[in-house]
Image 1 (tube, rainbow, N blue to C red):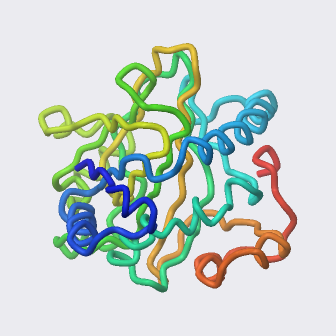
Image 2 (cartoon, rainbow, N blue to C red):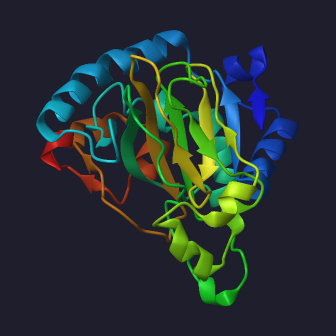
Image 3 (tube, rainbow, N blue to C red):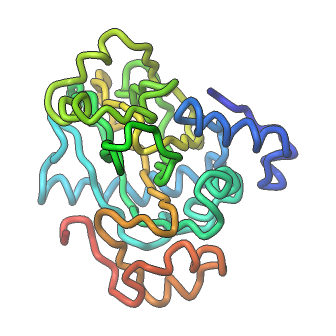
Length: 272
């Protein structure tokens, strides 16, 4: 579902009560919500200008790592990537809090880029069911926040998702297939491509089936990617957070990052 913010919601950084309820319910039941143009063009331009030289150096040193002309790259914990407008965005966090609780944590600080000539990824889920033997779907425990640095259209490699229940699949047998060839069932299930204007945000259940699609343009398509977990769930790498950057954060920002590597120096993506 796409939600277009009102001018008052943008100005206040707060969804009205009805929209907050609708957005959280869409993530719970349908697997995702698209919030149109949360960040300003100026904010995104700053992010894009900072990202481009880092990504260029990364690919020169490390190449592409998630398929043909496609790269996952950790971000250094520096401005503007760690700005409050990005990682402590009040509109995004209000929805995340509704689903994961106000004691949730930020545990992943990275990006996904589809370059010219990138191909389809296999359909996949980013995490397995926690307890597949139970035979029931559990509530969300991990959410992904994606922020595009360019307009995302049919041609430049949009994310394709399988909403409406794929995140609630608990069949461990079918899940085994998902890590190899595309899930057979996905060929016959409804999917959609996430098309959005620059500055938009997508919040999705990390279990949702998805794949990257080909970028047929001559420009990079980058999504920043952040993962928020319930307080008790831990998975993946930790984020090196320099002390001076941590000290500048709001109390909420500090709470989000409380279990990360506070006091470590900035780590550039090619140093992982």
